[in-house]
Structure formats: structure tokens, C-alpha cells
Amino acid sequence: MVVPLSGAVPQIKGDAVYDKALGYMGFHGGEAMLGKRVDVVFIGSCTNGRLEDLQAAAKVLKGRKVAAGVKLLIVPGSQQIKHDAEALGLAQIFKDAGADWRESGCSMCLGMNGDTVGRRPVLISTSNRNFEGRQGVGARTLLVSPMTAAASAVQRQDR
Image (tube, rainbow, N blue to C red):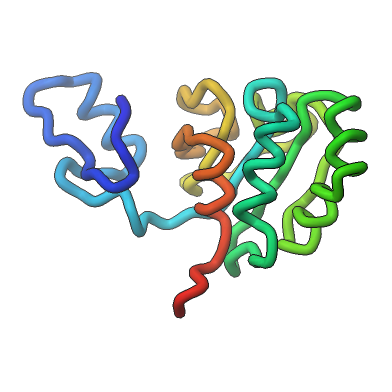
């Protein structure tokens, strides 16, 4: 179930699995993807926590702030990547933006170490799976690239 950000939620009739997924997410066919509420953004772990992923996210976040009401967690894919990102100044860009710069590991990718979200929040994640309950009971997860995740976390600059 993939849709471009500039697109709309597809309208598919007579597909019970699709209807269940939309019901769980609280989405409706025909709705625009842009403008949906975002509560938590997760960038990283082994799937999209490579140095180049963090560099791409930092490029988006530099000079911006995480939007009010949004929590941004950034988890490098390994201790080496964490060290390299810190040496390049990426960690400071993340912290200056208001992100939570974490230790490497699984973290919110699969809800480890208490990194889960509560019921019904919308989670933007760079992880590779979004089945029900993976990031917390009732969490609604949208999978995106690191750049899209970073852009989803920041406040609009034109307001």
C-alpha cells in the first residue's frame, strides 16, 4: 500500500484487507496525504540509519526546529555511524533542531527499550515494517525515507 505524498489515499472497493488497513489508520479513500497530523517521527536503526541517511536528514533539519507537539527520535545504525555523525557535526544539527539523538540500536523500529508510542498517534518512520502493534499498541505508522521523515517533523517555514 504505497501512495506518493502529493497523492490521495486510493479508493478501493470490495477489498476487506484494504478496508481493515484504512480503518486501523483512520484514513478514508480520496483523502490527501499532505496535511495529516504527525505525532512522532523516527529516523534510523539498521534500516535507514546509515551515515548517508543521517546526512540527508540533517540537510533538511539544519536551521529548522521540530514542530510543536512532534517528537523526533534519531537512532544511528551502529556505534561507528554514531561516532562518524558526531564527528561531522550531524548530531549537533539534530539537537539544535530539537531532536532526541540516541544511542545506536533497534529502538522504535520494533518498540525496544521502551521506545514505543501510545494509542492512536501517527508515527512517521524510516523502519522497514509497519504492521499493527510494532511500534506500540494502536500506533499508526507510515513508512517514509529519511528526508521525508525529517521534513515531516519540522514546522513550516512559510507561516
